Length: 144
Image: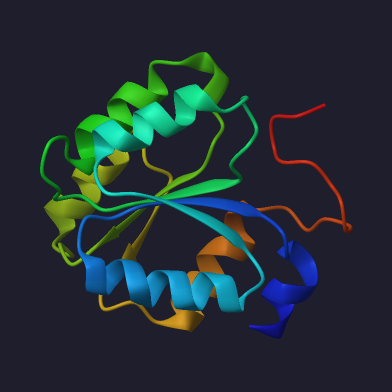
């Protein structure tokens, strides 16, 4: 986990999660890694957040699958319709761990999968897989 702090500290994460306890756990871990985290309580709010920032603002999205208003699969499909967010890593963060759940995540346009309950080691592996190492002050994936 020290590697996360060393290689990607300062990365910006959008956490899309409706459950307050899951939000709290994920925020604690991600902020402990030195990451900046914004929270959206459903897919619709996540889309609004993305529309309000420049492409490249976020380095990665953690997306719950089951949420009120707009679920994670629908939100991911909507995000992928915008070419500005085509390369933005979206990672399912869900208790739905059956093979068909994973398949649905990938079919919707998600890049990876992490299961709940949330473990720091699992989050660290996913973060390091999708966010390139950066020097202090480096910009996010889409910025030039």
